[in-house]
Image (cartoon, rainbow, N blue to C red):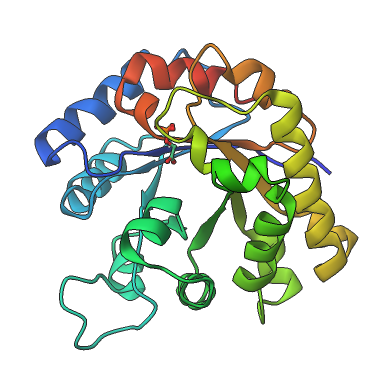
Length: 256
Ligand code: PGA
């Protein structure tokens, strides 16, 4: 089964809507013709940029999917500062990141909340990019797989096999995010293969072969080819390097 790789740019809290428009226009300009034939690219700007980027993508017919970085799991209600998945769907958002380690660690998101978000995103026919990953301390204690596979089990509880097959899992070792340290391609492959095996045990062969697994954590043009060539790595979740159109374009070229 061939899985189309997904390269996602997670801008975090960077770039206002003017800067966002310029960045997406430049990205479109610098990607060589044909580089996106077998790869999908999603852009995840801050909420205040989403409408501008939606308009740009749709009016210029750009080959990028619109993404969000986060959402609430309820449709509406008294949740000051939160954004409903229904509102994101109205903007033709295609992918929504959930359970990013920064949301888990800084904003106290639990596995249960991540699970509720996965279901809410699917309910509005968008695709969750569900993140998982271990801290350095957990890695050094030999707890990488138990932590990551526990997050997968909890995050996907009660989600149908067909829905699991359609979603994206991002393996992001926390110690590699924004630090310049990357897991070796072998280490990243080992954990991504364990994630796929976990999905297989939960939801069967076909589902495990369909689900896309990204690697994230200091991905750059220089390390992308080796990471992307691993059999269980189906793309990348890119933070810092996605803010630079030239660097992001070079990662996209290695996505195939
Ligand atoms: P980074 O971030 O590429 O800057 O390490 C990745 C992420 O947090 O998604």
